[in-house]
Image 1 (cartoon, one colour):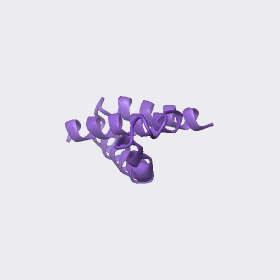
Image 2 (cartoon, one colour; image 1 turned 30 degrees about the vertical axis):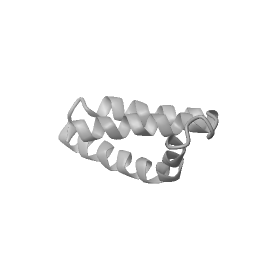
Image 3 (cartoon, helix red, strand yellow; image 1 turned 90 degrees about the vertical axis):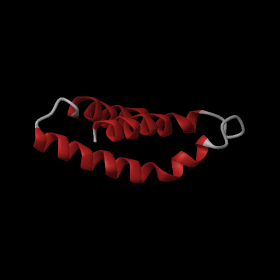
Length: 73
């Protein structure tokens, strides 16, 4: 479960940075911007799950969600 959460967080960070990169350079990765809303929903669900479990895995996920907000503002 933690591994899937970590992979999802890394993919979300990559999707956060893609608007700043040229689509011609990374055509395959530009598809990640289309699934960013689903990544955010899944990250939110993982955040609630880890919060209920009181695990330390919640810290990187929470940082990822907050950092993504600051990137787009």
